[in-house]
Image 1 (cartoon, one colour):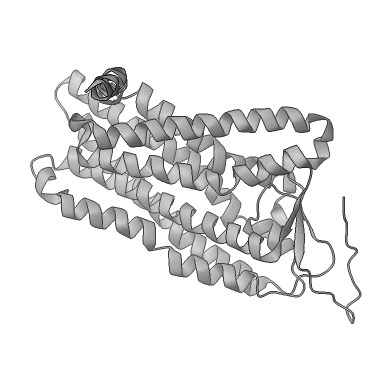
Image 2 (cartoon, helix red, strand yellow):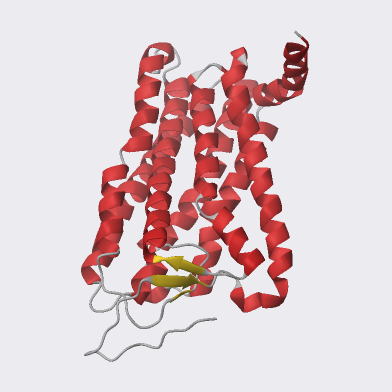
Length: 320
């Protein structure tokens, strides 16, 4: 393992590559971790891929809720593909070097896709709010054009800000140690390697996180506060149960993602450890994409019905 000692103040050498340590501290478990994360990656690709396909191909799932769910599943595939393939390569080959450009590119994609996930989860909460609190206006409010605009806005709105933030972070001078005690190029461990005062960068990270993570999270809480209030007023216990079942799946996914993301990016740099950062990052980069298909399929009768009938439809179409 390479280690570059911190250079004296007057003779700083600019780093051109980093070393992602990922799980190097448990060297005896490298093959086991490779098999585990490979299995997880396959489950994520298959689970989210199937949900994406059935929401596009099944005529009964052509509604705004499933349109957003299909986009969310596609997003999860993209999100996890930015980190897991490189981590699997490192675990198998033990080659952990990553160039400055590759590291910046990985970080930029993670931030853009993370912002997209925050916005898309807020959009999904808004969709449920309109469906439950204003059911008569739902077809008018959530028409096809509005759905396309909301999804497009979720995908592209974070791009300029996150590109700018990545550029500012990687314009800092890096010297001394080139070891990143993480499994991907995330903001907290990168800032720890920067030379000089990073206070302004930390403030920018805090501001962007508040805008892209905290604001959508608060919107989700407000939406679900109104949703729960409306559900409790429903006269039928069956209606209340159905409404809670529909919304609880989304709330579970949002809680997993936002809970770990808020602690990671809104916590002061001095209060975190590398181990804690890795565990939190595993939640919002891997655990959420794994459980997303299970939560939405096992708790959703429409999706389960489509999953049962979809193979038969596919086979019959092949015969034709």
